[in-house]
Amino acid sequence: MNKFQIGSEAVAGGHHGWIRKVHRATNEILRDSRGEPIIFATQDAAKAAAGEAMVAYLNTPMLRDGARVEAIHKAEAFFKPKSASVTAATESLA
Image (cartoon, rainbow, N blue to C red; front, side):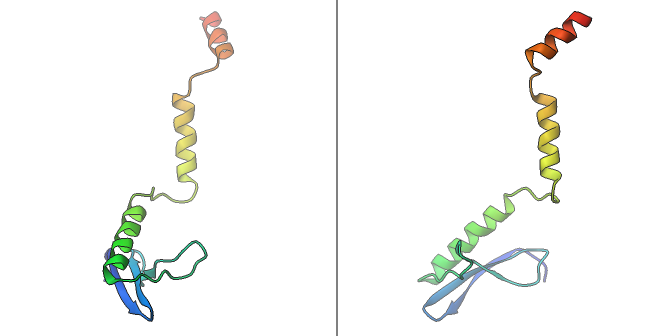
């Protein structure tokens, strides 16, 4: 079923934590910076880490590639103060 979920799975030496995203049909095992699955000592530790990973995933901007950069550029162009030379030139025309 397509829904967000977290969980743990018993493995040799401990437990893996996993998350399931709505748009994926498989569990994603939590991995370290090298890409190796993390083995937690307890089921509770694995589920806690999975919960933290899910919250981190849900709090990231969910935009298509490039849309975030484009939005930031437009916002900066709108809110960024104009330089003094541009302001002076504009005032002299008025």
